[in-house]
Length: 343
Length: 285
Image (cartoon, rainbow over all chains, first blue to last red; front, side, top):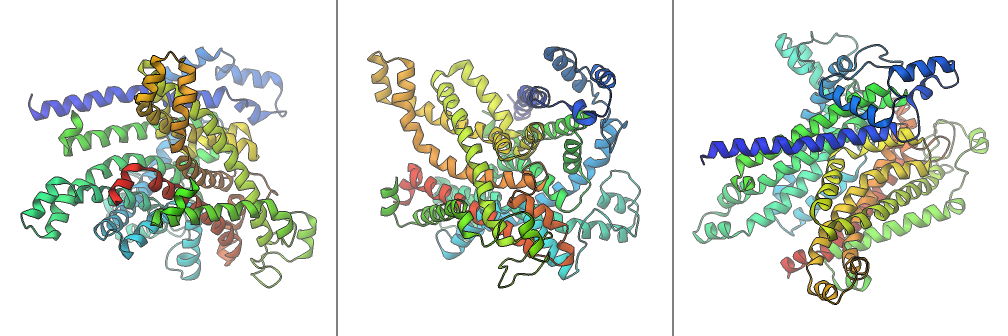
């Protein structure tokens, strides 16, 4: 079979396998939201609205039906793209999809920026650590990897705010944009891209200045995981037979590291990237709170606080979709890079 | 396990000892908080006697917070809350994950595959978000938060137990027990469980570290512990409002406690991992 065909087949298989995963995640969300005691309607109006209003709302949302019926409606609605309408105080009446569309770009911008910071720092530390195995640099690098990973992201964020925004006044304290100027016209919702599209370099700089601290915060915490993975894999490849063979042929150590060992050590990093996104989203919720960043994480916590049930559901589902999508992409990507994975 | 630590003066050994030391110190702080803390953690006494938001001084080593409460005392008392939530979360996760993993790995086949798929899917989801959801449903308080974070770690304990069971199951002595007519229950709990248990301390320490972080995160988000209970994450979220006034001590010290404890637990976990993992041992020799 030609190489192309088998890759396509692999991608398709992976896509089909992702379906049960998505279904399970949706089921878990359903279970948590409905079977655990606690009623969104009661939480919203408890004691304040007459019973008839509560019953009517319960009926409108289908909460008076048996669980299996609710579950079926829920699954069917999600797969037909109907996420419902927000109930809560903040976005009451707006469609869940519309609210998420407003909030998603902020989180995407934060995530991409953080990933850039995390991979640059993490891979460098891991590489330096791995090459200098068991030397002082390595011990420092390993300690960095272990320590940075367990620093609460919100604490790091507060400390960076204190240093760079409150004391030194180099960067803005929080939020996505200066209050004094208005953000660029919305095309993608990403302020950096939108300001470039509008040809406004000044707005681009404002957007970047607001991005630096949140991305640095989240990126630093995530970099520990990268550092550890790169180091561990480099140690494995550095002693592999094909590297040993290259060494025996008299190839310079520098070339061996960059051409033979490093490249192969990076393959598992792609797999790690998939896992990192789950951690990234958890970190994003906290970072968005610290930096008053108006994204999906804040949306989720705000809707949890007011028990805005369709919005909670919608946000969680979007997160699940993205995670499943990334896990597929990661698998396909590693299939492209390393043909062994496909078999 | 301890004599094993004593013999190896490697980085892993040193890390394990430091980690264990930190854990012991924090446990002592939690137990002895009533004796150690110079002021009560909360209440009108602390509130009315001292001015709010004071910088660290001789009387208040870590300053006072916005209510005039002594930060040092709250930080010490906070160890109780953190360790309590962590212990509930991790022990419950072990209590569920271990038996299910043992069963799943032992019976194999389609039951195993189904459980694995469910656990893996849950594991792929951001733990904090899932815990936030459960916490919001259950309500605040240490016990509920403990249960909420359990959801994250059950798949972890399951995975480790199951994988170890898969390899132990094929050992000769298990084969022997089976051919002698031992019942599956006996084989699982007498012959396999003990040999799977060796992998647990590593996971226990690492998940404990993560549990501390997650619990602090939930409190920070306002879904965890309720005021006026002293809790590091909660105190940080309150302190955040006063950060722009240059009040750093109310956020710096609770964070430092979280970091020290989680670093200790990670050191313990990673150190133990290097000591227990036989592959790594061989590599070093």
